[in-house]
Amino acid sequence: MIVFLSIVLLSLAGRSFCQAANATSHLKKPLIYQIGNVVRINADGERPLLRALDALQEKYGWVVDYEDPRHPADADGAGNADALPSRRHAGARNSRREALSVEFTVGPASDSFPDENTVLTTVVNAYNEGNAVMQFELRNGSDNQNGGQQERRFDVLGIIVSDHQNETQNQRPILDAPITVTKRPRTAEQTLALICQQVSERSKIPVTVGAIDGTVGGSREVAIGGVEVLARTLLSITLASMGDHLSWRLLYDSASKSYELSVNGPPQ
Image (cartoon, rainbow, N blue to C red; front, side, top):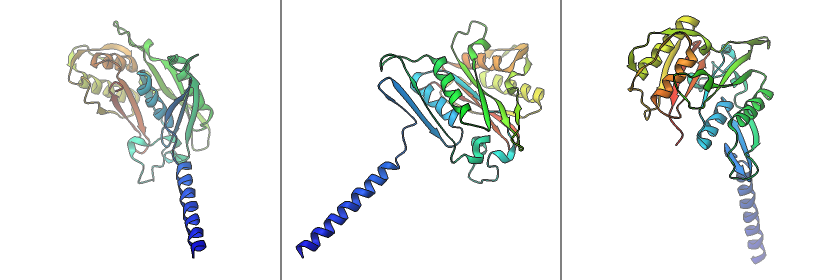
């Protein structure tokens, strides 16, 4: 009897250990983590590049804007009832398997502060190398600002997509369109809506304002405008007038063939 109980207890203990080990093996790695002077990012699901950019912004306080490319409807799971329009994208044809894994060195010591341009270039290049559906470009968004705005920002823009025949198509980012906005006092939210309206009229692609972080100055009065100025420039200036360290996200919904603009508050 004693021998039988010992065998049962050992069997249960072994099973518990195996279950615990199995559960541990299935634990997801953190989205971003640092070991010594090396930082690793593991992002998966829909828009892994955007998830990586969000993580970098939160960790380092960088200002990085993001713009989806325009992609075919059947490339983003439009028939999937679980795919929310605001989260669809071209990689969702295999969105459950799409992932971005990349690492970089912050510097000679673990408390070194990494160079923003170098890190963002590394992340964008890693995504492009592992994705055959979409390709992105990194730009120094600070070049889009004028009027004394000095905040450093970067833009990550979709510039290439694959069509139904897997042929690549170069695209001009929609916010590169020159628009005219009469300069007069308006709220920041009204200015954003007017910029989107002008881009829609110029590109013939609907662009609307979506979520604006409640902590930013959307109701603040600003006077921003210009004649045949890049929409991207006016957008950057408007965000700079609303507060520090704000960034925008321009996401494309292929089902409605439209864009939605959102504004993120500063990293907490």
